[in-house]
Length: 524
Image (cartoon, rainbow, N blue to C red; front, top):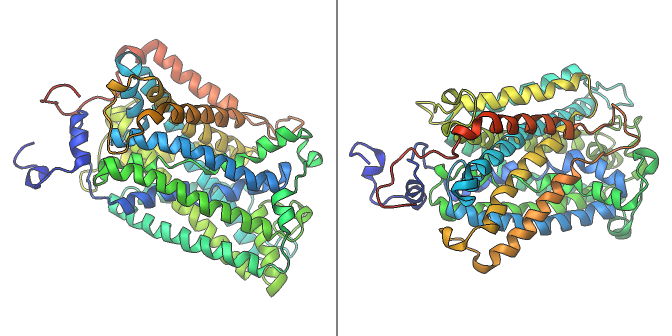
């Protein structure tokens, strides 16, 4: 480092920056984020409400409350295996590219380029689609707020049409991109608001909702009632219904890798990155289950939730649960609207955090020449030190994903499946590589599993494979154009083109992460 560099004036180099330099990368982004700020962004990406709320109704419909409630416990258990495996890798490789970088180094020189290529594109697809899931669910919540504010479905309220729904979707995406063009400390500050918003707001909803509801479902109904709604879903197989009812939990319990995307900007990232990952899982596990229980105990009439003639037009089950509780006691919908606004805020903060993570992955991949026109997307804003071009590229692709809203009814199902398979599928590559690599080739960080790494990685890898498989299944029968889960077709085309590019051209020049600093003291 030259005398004029900021690092030269430091008494002691940050441990995360030292490890980054050992891996062959120079510090370009500002390393200003504390553990709490990193945890805030990671927690905001997972978010308490954004996973559970949009899929709660469909999961309840498939197999009843017991499967939904216990499904969260089962999925949480296996999620810990994935999180622990990733925390160990994050401790060893604290880089912005995270999963993509991990895959390249863990797979070795022979398979490293292909592993990083697969991982990078899976993660990019998942994160960009993740922005779309937040924008869609946020628009859905806003649609319910407008409907209740204008008189409900029964009272002549305004149900936003598809064109306005699309405008809300685009508006949220653009706002998130705009905010991400500012310095990272602005985003970190907003995400600190987010973590308190969700902790305080979540606590309020979990405690207040069952207290406000005039009647509450029995513990027997919540924890043991199983019911297959074959007339509504076309699914009569009980095991199949249970599998689909778990989707809400599998969709909700990921995103904890967000802390890894910010490790080049976090102080002591080799220690604080793993702590942020595991802390996020712990918080969401507890709060998420409490939220599911609060909603389920507060149901007034299970059969009325899905009625297209109810106050929320049968479009959003959590909104109807809130409305029934507050209107039943206070004869107005003000309380439901306030709690829906809290939930909407969670979608807003979640989308903002996912946009931050998506841009970092595109920036890291562009830095290594893995994206068309990489020179454009790897540019860092000279003043704010954020990859602003990558931010707007992610926003533009997300908007394109949302355009079918005008014509297709199952857009959210498809975007959710693409998001989950891409995002979670990206976890599988470095975890599998870590499982099969020789231990002497791994330079452990402060968080190290030792002999436990193989069984933990095996369980994590198998769980990820199962999760990806179930998101490709049809969710309604009989299958028609209006009920077809087109995620397999969309992913097949996208991944087919990506692999074709690899075979025909990219394998000749793509070598994975490219060093931008010379390592003087021997090999990494």
